[in-house]
Image (cartoon, rainbow, N blue to C red; front, side, top):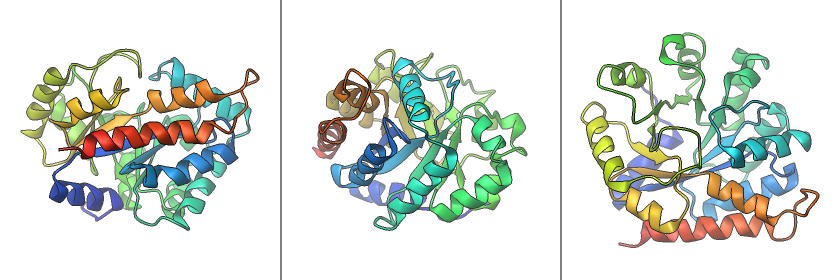
Length: 275
């Protein structure tokens, strides 16, 4: 099933430009909905090419401490799936071109329930989903229904995704493939650029999809090094870390919270745009 989404158009445009995409991850509602909405609205102008918006969940098992803490802050501040979809809808009133991917776990989608979630996500202006705990063996559960709604379903491949497993991972993936540069949880180690480039090259022998690399990319220098051999670079924990550092001792947002995140995005974007 093929369809044209903002994600497809953005990666095609960047290919023409000859540079990798900067894919930014923030958790919806972190540290509160007002600040989170301000960050979301500011990401495109700061240089984000694709936005991953985390769906807060109480048990984010694949995430490291920074993103786990972000999820808990958002939930504590009252973030819900409906509020997350409303954030996307508001964003679309001023930006109809920047792709938004919702990323997270199946439980909050399942209890929504799923079919209503897909319809409302599409209507709000969501372009794709990354749901880390739904394997290819369960494609009938969420992936295929998402595709019917015109949503890209983006899968993760890891250093342990071998030649035998890769076809299953790629089968119904669309938009892009997210390559996890290190084994383990998010934001806990630095990736080896040359090893990552070899893995991306191997994967691209089996797919025409763009490959974006994430987990462990924190600095403009790292982003530039990874981008040299990938179609996109995903930065999440470092941005969420900027939020955390800017908060008061009670965990509340300050005047520095949104600018701190957007300043880091600007420096990352600048590194990817330098030839």
